[in-house]
Image 1 (tube, helix red, strand yellow):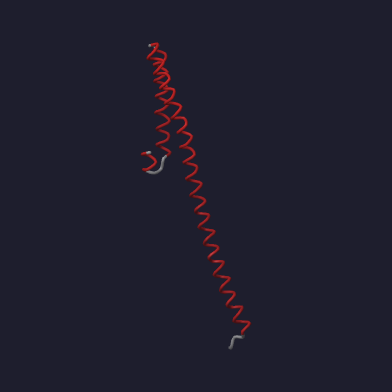
Image 2: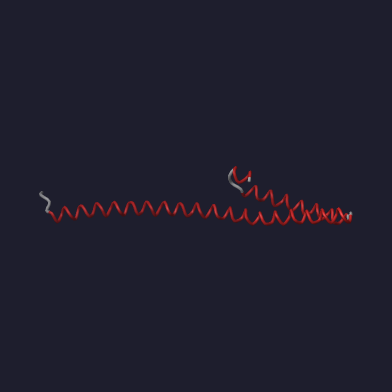
Length: 107
């Protein structure tokens, strides 16, 4: 059976169309995988950034209670300092449990 020019054109365009669709499907799949990974990373990083603020506030509280205790020698201020230290330790443990890579656990 001899193929006509029209049938050869149709087969050629069909092959090109199938290749383009395959490449497009592959690209869509890879973009979806990238999007899923990106969302996961952002969710962890945002949680760590929220804890960063809590840790900074806790350190500032400790420093404030320390300075006030040094001036007044009031035992209540020392207890509040210890309470702020406990909060800091709690937040730090939570951040370490969230961090999923050795680099994040170090920094």
